[in-house]
Image 1 (cartoon, helix red, strand yellow):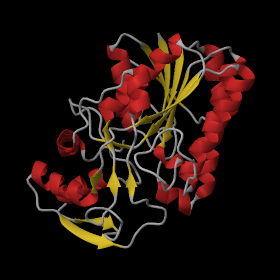
Image 2 (cartoon, one colour; image 1 turned 120 degrees about the vertical axis):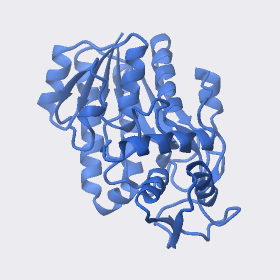
Image 3 (tube, helix red, strand yellow; image 1 turned 60 degrees about the vertical axis):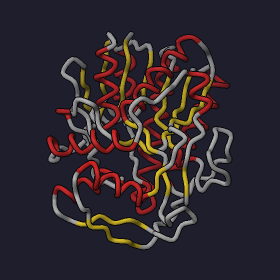
Image 4 (spheres, helix red, strand yellow; image 1 turned 120 degrees about the horizontal axis):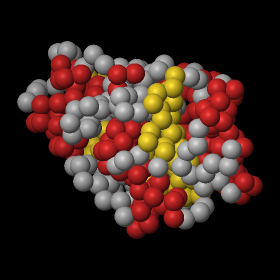
Length: 327
């Protein structure tokens, strides 16, 4: 099987590349390297550097190659940045996706796996959140992903596009062998920010301690990056066997508060992290917890590494070894 992985020089994409190669797949990576790291790409893969917003570039990739599946990770991911600069989110996340899908249709290719987000739901009206929950994004990032999902549905109806959209909750942790970890630029996720704070002897900020939760801090559902990659592998298998458009929440169904997260980080890392409580960020929900029953039932998904201690331990080991990398 030949797979195209966009954003394969990034956090989740680079581990997807390695995992697919280890399963015997042929893998091509397309990445602009704007926010990825060339060194993160497994040397067994073919890397093409280019901008997916460029229609001619995308057309050349698909005219010169035949793929059995396309896994689209490439995109901007910061909710805060999207509020400050919505244009780049709508431009990058939507137009790149549209170019890929259009070229796939033109060249009679199918099986598109989309890296989506629980941000499409916005502030939930019920928890845990299933796939039928109302979609009300609270920031341009979530809106950009929801627009792409709607585009995929239209292409499925009009051209028979086969796709699966995976709505991540909180991707976290690092690969078990410390070859793939989280260090975005800009970094907005609490686990890598907390670990960096320990390594640099700085404080970490928690945004808000007056939420309607058990200890006043936000509650989130964390999924280990290795389990997240496995969900993509299972989704490809699904599309090989069944035609249609599918949406899946990728989470565990268990939530941890920011305070619980800090306590576990201190325990695993043997630290005493300095914490600064700041005001809430606009759009942050009290609790975001997945109802994962659909992906468990339809794909047989069963997370193996997503307990909080394993997530933090793998992240800690990766950051100690690779803290200067940008991926």
